[in-house]
Image (tube, rainbow, N blue to C red; front, top):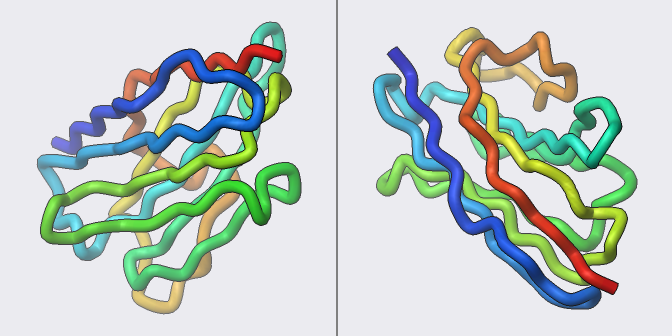
Length: 127
């Protein structure tokens, strides 16, 4: 059974940076694709970034050029480096994972493409 644990959230001033971590256990991590989603206050979940089992990445237009997703298979961890943060980035950030991919599968943007979810970590950006 997969377990995903996020960390690294917090309060930061506009223009600042944070790095989120998603530690995964209970699955074969090298065959595991991961995505980051966020839910701003009073809004629906939205896609942020995704990385495939082979390291191919995809980003939402709103974060492209500011956020970087990466994975460290030895640490069983996916990172989301966030820079140039602005108040619109305030949200609960959750990582999600799936083992149901093949080696050529592209990054997944849809929430229903993932069967495993972490509990989320709050990111608050002050102006």
